[in-house]
Length: 286
Picture 1 (cartoon, rainbow, N blue to C red):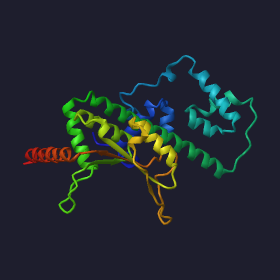
Picture 2 (cartoon, rainbow, N blue to C red):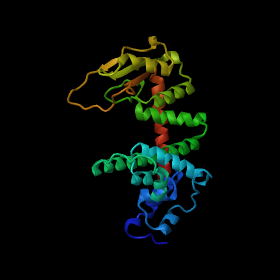
Picture 3 (cartoon, rainbow, N blue to C red):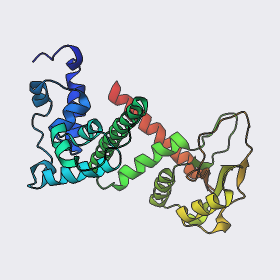
Picture 4 (spheres, rainbow, N blue to C red):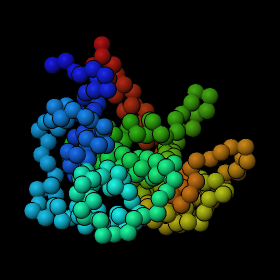
């Protein structure tokens, strides 16, 4: 079927937004007003297969709307704002709130700003819900990791984020650096799988001098469950006043360096495992 032209040309994109609003609990009227759809046939096609939210089917749905309309009116909302928010007619709103005092008239520009902000807040909430739904669905696809899956994951993880031997700098050390606590947890689980004794692990916190260094040190120590004696002296990064850093705030805890003592043999095995994985991947694309 050909898509409608004009403002309905991106029909699939419009349907995604309409379905997201429906699943967020909005009524047909609310969706129509949000998306500025003036054709009921188009609206029917956009919402095809999507059941109405439960609140629209409750016997007391009108009572709930009436109470909410009165609440918003007392907060100073206009009929237009209440209609966009609740998706009901102005005539109904007028009956529900006619005994309440009229709100002070705001300048049109202020009303426009409030309405725009409300629409944007709602749009952000819908987007966030869609993101969370996708993440939850993706997480369910993983299931339980087998030992072999964790083994291969760890090899790739190390080769992406760990230090590597160079022809001009032969060190063959197993050193992993990351700021993501999830990556640190996976790396440690991988080392456990390989039978690396945790007594062989040493840690170093790397962090900017403008951060809460003491709190960061305690955070990483708690995360890895290691005694502070397993930590080397924290590396403090000097702040460059010409640089605008975005990794600031309470959640910034710098990076953790995980070092495996006497790790030369393990490093060589990791490099061998990785080279074999590359060969296998090349055979798949040959």
